[in-house]
Length: 318
Image 1 (tube, rainbow, N blue to C red):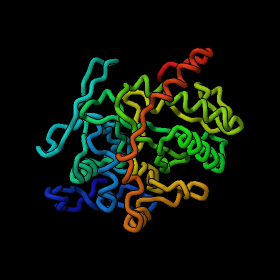
Image 2 (cartoon, helix red, strand yellow):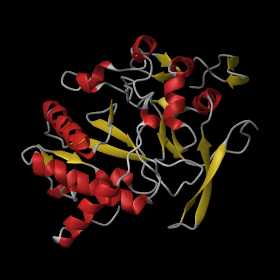
Image 3 (cartoon, rainbow, N blue to C red):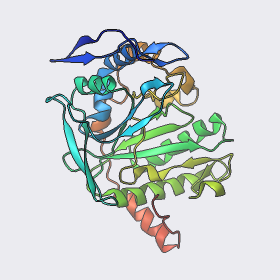
C-alpha cells in the first residue's frame, strides 16, 4: 500500500532534494523508512561520496521497499534534476550505451535514495576514462560451509601478500558473509589485464593457504568449506556494493570500512544503518587515505605471465 505521507524537502549541500513518501517502510523487520535511509546516507556523507566519486554507478532500487522486487538500474531515468551528473558507458555485447549515475556530491546520493535506491554498486573506474580501472578489488567470498574465522584468517594472508608487493590494502565488510579489500592502482591497464593480475594474486594467496582458499572457477567444483578469492569482480562492468552502502536485507547491514587491527575480531552483523553513523562520527572514514596509496600492478602481471607459461589457463569471464 502506498504511503500517503507528504513530500518533504531536504537541504543537501547547495541543493534541495525532494523526498516523496518519506514514511514508506523500506525495512519491514525494523520499520525503518525511506527517510531513515536518506538520513543514514547523509550521516556518512564524506565516506559514501569518496567511495562513489566520479564512478559509473548501478543503483539497486526497491520501489516498494524490501517487501517488493529489486530493480537493477543502470540508466538514469528521464526527469532527473539538471544538476545530477552522469557518465555514458557502453555495453558491447548488446551494442548499447547507458548514462549511469556519476556521484560527485552528496545531493546525488540523496536523489538516488529518493528514487528508491538502497544499494550503490560503482564501477572500479572513473569517468575520465571508464575503460581504465583505478581500483583493484579483492573479494573474499566464503562458500556455504566456510566459517567466518576462515575469512578472517585468509584476510591476514592477503595482507601479507600485499605487504610483500608494497601495496596498501583497505579492508571493509561486504555487508554479507565476506570481506573486501580495495587497492588503489595506477589506471595504466585495462580490465582484462587487471583481471589477470587479480587472478595471479588470488593464486598466490591459495599457495600460501591451500587448506583455506580456492580459485576453482566453477562454483559446483569448489570445496564448500573453502573461501573463494573472487578475482572476476575486476572484470569490466562487474560491480560490488561500495563502502558505506546499505545492503538490501532486513537487518540493513552496511558494507563498512574497518582497520586491519579489527579483522581478527570483526562481526559484520554489528554494522548496520542504525550503528554505523555513530561509528562514523567517532572514527571518520577509515578509507580516507585510499587515494594517496597508489600501486602499480606490473609485478602482478609478471606473476600472471609466469603462471600462464606454466600452463595455468585464465578462465573465461562470465
